[in-house]
Image (cartoon, rainbow, N blue to C red):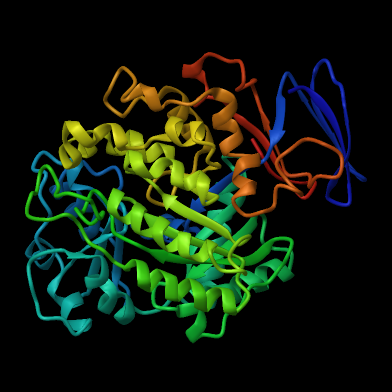
Length: 487
């Protein structure tokens, strides 16, 4: 919309009509954007800030189209004394030979320096013999999946607080450039919170972070981490994993994989284990629980656990989220709404995964995948994110995925009955995303009294042709009334 917005003390004081574009007036400055439109700042309601910082500073394999290209990039990485080589983003689905890489291939380029390369979804790890020995593992030639990776994470040298601060700020600046003003930061290690807190208190954290702290092994409890309010850093929830990822055959399915009938995936937490972790969290005062669930069996297990939580006197109003909800059995769609469970989805995953999902699920189950229309029609709150660094941090790409649903390499919509409208897509990245952290009373609408978190675009993404949404330019991003990014 065109508007003249007056900002005072970081909040919107007035929204006035404007016929020529958008104008933002603060106590000290005036910013004019002729022909441009202002929207509430975008929210990424499921992402990994430290992971994006690592992607910006480590070896990226995200666009590599072959095993050989991955090896060449890793071989070219600088070797520092005492440091491991870290790479991220390989995806065998993009290679001619769609098979997991062998660890001996890494030994051929780095025999003595530990090398760790995580798959694009973060649920599989390719590492050389030196990294396996340093992790106390028996040397093997297969990739590690999900819990098998834990000894490696424990053995890898931790980043210093200064390295973390640099990575966090770099990731936040990348978010600002695509119009993101707030991130729901998932699976946060308790040790990362101190550098985040220091940045926030120094006024050096340029976007708002809602932190969901690790609870898979009750990490928050072991370190004494508790919820905390704050303007730019809010420690608000705990995060669990019910299963792995579809790409690594780790998503937990109700029946075996179509392309690997010997497995139905990995159950990382049982329903009773999730209930016990939820009980511990509520007793400590946490008001939000987020659980990763991709396969239909995992989604059902989480809903079963949440049904128990809702039966508790102190569980009726707690915020319950299912992260990803990529594959939902028809019997479970309405349960989201009945239990007031929010679906936090990543639409660009659909575009990246479509061909792979067809192979993994088969024709009969495919209509149950990435079912945004079905969830909305059932009355479910649908919030959106990107899961960066797995996908690029681009809300415009996400809105396009919601509306057109055209996978990479395709020319037409895929399972188009699950597309959603332009208004619903933008809502999922703005007001509804704030609902999933119970901050919609402060943000997500251009009305007086709301926080002045704003994005300026060169076109009206509500009315432009569908295929132009992704090409809109972010002219500026404001957080708490301050311009933090300008094109």
